[in-house]
Length: 78
Image: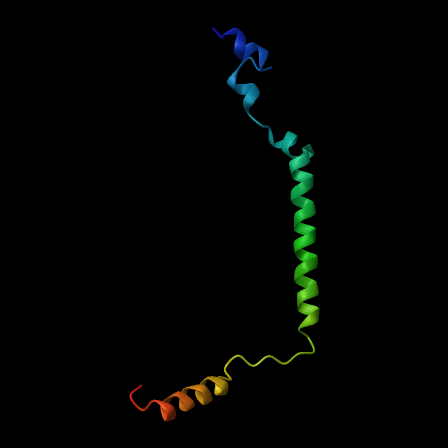
């Protein structure tokens, strides 16, 4: 049914290729996922703490208007 190559790979059926949910929880991959989630949470918290004391104004575009007014006075065709 299976060739010698397939038997040498260590599996004898398709069922052996399936990763069980219990095996996933014990795998190295699961530990890496948990570690990555912890790193991302810590990064998010540190970024939030950095921005607590800073007041951010997103709708202040006065510097753009000043630059546009200078361009219009120098080149009235714009």
